[in-house]
Amino acid sequence: MILKNPFSTRSDRWQPIIKAFTKALGAQNVIRRKDELLTYECDGLAAYRQRPALVVLPRTTEEVAQAVQICREYQLPWVARGAGTGLSGGALPVEEGVLIVTAKMKRILNVDLANQRVVVQPGVINNWVTQAVSGAGFYYAPDPSSQIICSIGGNIAENSGGVHCLKYGVTTNHVLGLKIVTPQGEIIDVGGCVPEMPGYDLTGLFVGSEGTLGIATEITLRILKTPEAICVLLADFESIEAAGGAVADIISAGIIPAGMEMMDNLSINAVEDVVATGCYPRDAGAILLVELDGLEVEVSGNKQRVAQLCRQNGARQITSASDGETRLKLWKGRKAAFAAAGHMSPNYFVQDGVIPRTKLVQVLGEIEALSRESGFAIANVFHAGDGNLHPLILYDQAVPGAFEQVEKVGEEILRLCVEAGGSLSGEHGIGADKNCSMPRMFNEVDLETMQYVRAVFNPDGLANPGKLFPTPRTCGEAANQRPQGEFKGASLF
Image (cartoon, rainbow, N blue to C red; front, side, top):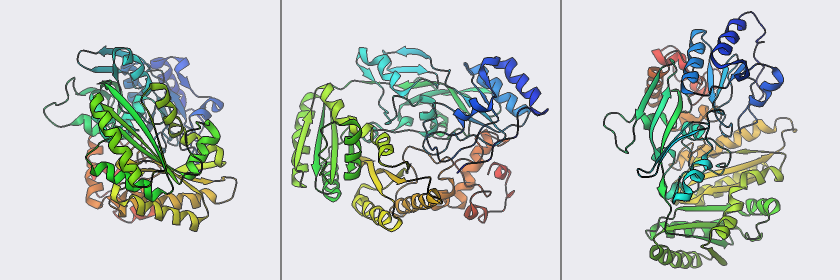
């Protein structure tokens, strides 16, 4: 979906705006040339594009506040962007709007090992946090597949997860406090330096708000001690059904792995073509990766139990690794799955839905039926332990109408997830991609209540408009649900 370009920033209206940003941030931190703006016209959901009118790159909390204040003064819509790796169009620019990019805010401000916390700016890359503390025996648990390039600010906005979310939770479980610039340009602090603070959980409210409530400029993260022992098992099965049975039995046995991931045959062959791990049998119907961690005696016992449960469900071969180098090799293919999809097809569209573990086999069967009916191959890579699916729909954008058909397939997958008792998103967020599907999961009162919350923080509707919630201009279903202007927050639709 290519949106039209914004009006020219050469117009008389833009001259005082550009002058104000230049004075506040410096000319080198204000991007206005069309060729340079092309870099920022989409995030990881490259099918949706919109060139911003202007891009600004603040370096401090105060400069972020100044940028937001200028936008408010001139009533300019704005969108915050980190590394641009999001997959739901959450950082898609807004027509005639400003993109506030936090990429230059990449300092680790404080490392407090004694209290197991780190304070970072939003532009810090996810993997840098673990690198900063690993020498002292600590790590940062949330680990999206894009962790070597995605930023903490984006992780906060989307409440990102990763391989280890099964045992350790997603981003919100590891954020102690935030310094925030509100959409009104004010600087506030929420949360603190301890896990439980009295009063409303504003930190929990902000994490996952997708840039609609402000911009986090300093983030206090919780870090964990590196486990005494870690073991990864890779089991291959003749079918996804058999691997799904192993997942259910492992959880039923009371074992909570640090991570448990599954890949189907299409994904297996894609990653072997690209990264050639040599670990993933090309003839397998599915592989299951199970990571166990904890005390040595606990890991040793669980390793034997997991292997036994996998064999009972038909595992053909089980490989295990306890040393760091071999563990990384076993995980390499899973971490490269999205990139490998680009070698299978000119384009792919990744969805992100959640289902109960008990519905895993059923929903995957329905997705396979969708693939046959639509004619689009679908590769399945997912967090099997918590039912977070990432089906990759393969297509060729050069074929007229292909993307529109793929969008419909994606919407059908989300419908299957919600009807199975799941969710529209596990970690990628709603953004511009899934906002029209929100009425599938939330009723009119739910959506209205959330809009009231948004209106408190974002009364002018300038912060990331058109994202997260149904927008009548693009969502016919949502437009028919409620007359615009019914309540004060209606301008935020």
